[in-house]
Image 1 (cartoon, rainbow, N blue to C red):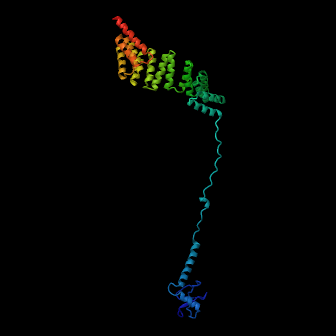
Image 2 (image 1 turned 60 degrees about the vertical axis):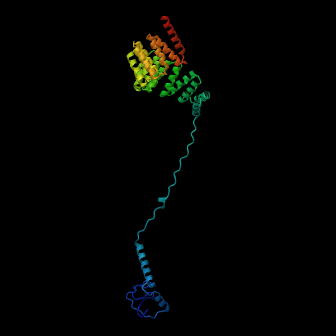
Image 3 (image 1 turned 90 degrees about the horizontal axis):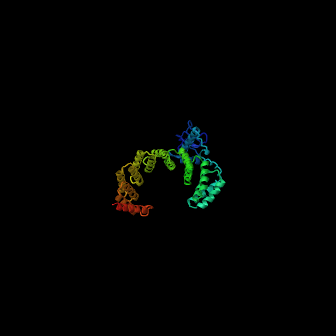
Length: 367
């Protein structure tokens, strides 16, 4: 630098250019400092030469000092940032699991009940009865055990003992319609219809609209000679299940037995309307019509059934009976023989063939 082109820093004695306002070395303010002489040490001259130019090291140092000062000031006003609690992001430990329950061990009678039922399904009736007898001994107050044991006894032919256990099951669980129904069935099978009717009535109190219970109780009433009571029950059944050909036929029979011929005829017609190929309903109606003096209508009704089903052999037998009753013997003989031809293994096939021979013989003798 030329003489007078610099200032000497009063703080550190460093040489600074005239245009610098702060000392390049210590940052001391140079305002008001007069230009100095050029008698400097070699080291100071070298330092001055290295900082010459518009972007020399002196400028860099000045800028760096300014940036550092600004950063210090800025950091003093910078808001502090709170770090989140690390526990916020931590996965909570799993809740302790409850202790495992002890495995369920069914009591002996339950195991025996299950084993006995499986044996019955497999057809091992004797073994089932033995196992279920043990179950009854272990659980004498369990209705399901008595019911299963009763089934096993029935299948083994011990019907009296079976009925006793069916009764016990129904006594222990009186709300079970199944127990009362099955007890009623075995009572019928063992010739105890009066008690069976009481059991059906109990079942009907629980299920008053059951067509099955109504039909079965009606059959017992008919067998007991009470067709009017049977007709009442069957009327209820057909109301619950209209269009059932079998129920309509049973109702027609009960009505006919009660002397209510007109209602019986209507019921037979309803049965045939539902099932035109019902040979039994057709034959019963035809014989009812014959009794009313409507032989031709009865014969036509049966011939109509044969046309619908030519293999309905029973209708050939009924046709023979109607023709014989109407005095049309040759036609009756032909119908009886046709029945014997179509159903040679039927229990009455030989009887009908013999009937045809006798009628034919009588006809020949009379002529």
